[in-house]
Image (cartoon, rainbow, N blue to C red; front, side, top):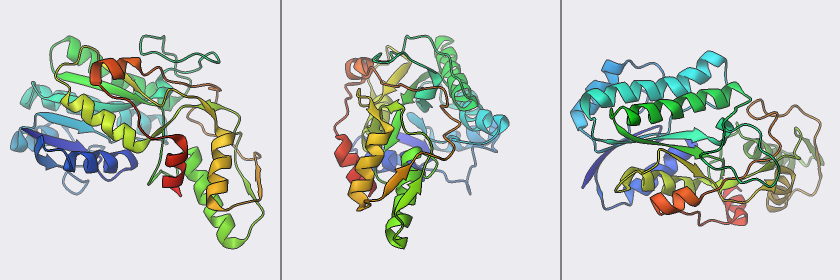
Length: 292
């Protein structure tokens, strides 16, 4: 029977993790501190240690992170909060399980048709990817030193209900909704020729819980994806069809700064299957329908 602390429970990923935990009979207590109680982006180690001491959780899950911003904001949001949680847990709950959400952007460019494995070389090409890689390395280092029992999940491209407007498909959905409402015959997006591995946010939540409750972590980094690469253009087309938009999707705007040099991304998810007993359940079409 387990007490769980979940940070970031109101975000796109965190909401689904919270729902999954709420239905789990192993969870006897769940604390989801909001910013009013503890803002991880501004908290000190002592602040976090005080909160953990009051709960003494067996599992700590971090879904807090930054998708955009300056170097300082990205490092603070993706690596800094990880460092603070590690220090606080090492002081108060060193035997608790810690799971953080990383990103496929940690890998950087991959050759076409290659499925990225956790043991592949990492070479991020954006500050976003660098900041997440720093968080992953901190977890690996802390685990190697015996300071905590933790894992970092490299999330590929999450989609599904409640998707953030900061993602390419979130932006597409918002533009398509506006176009249908206003009777527009075109929308303008950035380049859509890249191939991405889209994974349903509900599958991501299942992976987070699986890592949190795994009997033993024999690895510290896990890919969370679908194992399939799809052209972003094709997924936007599915989204347009599901939204009832029959106009033109133009690729004339600026693209994302998070992965400008990455044309191909596909996860090898064998490690998550073998160690966590996890695999994705939702098909791409189901995820697109859930977005709409």
